[in-house]
Length: 208
Image 1 (cartoon, rainbow, N blue to C red):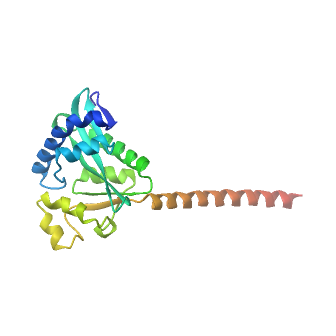
Image 2: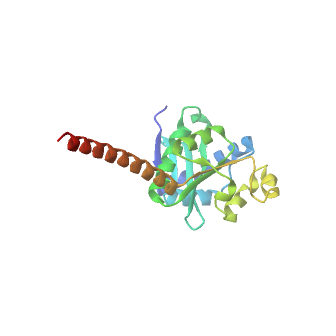
């Protein structure tokens, strides 16, 4: 990979809002799905409040992704993942995805992180991070989120199914489910060690 830094955005990156919007729009036009159109003002707010990750080679824009909060903070979406054409096919998307996911988990630790996507590469990245495929009913019911799909050519599919399904796949990372699973594993290991210890103690007792 080239000498690219993936950074948590701040006010100094507001100058990249225009090129970010242009890159998102160009990618959406090619794909026809998956990326809601955003204004430079909207992107600027994300950059300024630290709810975004930006990739730069020196001062040249390379990639971007931002955080959106839904359902009064119960849900987080990592949206607008984009890599500039000059920096594609070098593994940058994965690096950005991991950075924004980690940033989301640090900044909003209680929130469920979700994604809707048609891209197999994004699905693979999500799976590697612990996301699970879920029906749309398990995602946010915030109508503003779903309204963002209006620029997608498949929006009629979403509306015809009352937002129950579309060509996108819904994926969800639930920190509580993850913690519960981890807790069960820890309990299982502890109980196994406890059993071994008790067995050894009884053996020693019998030998006396």
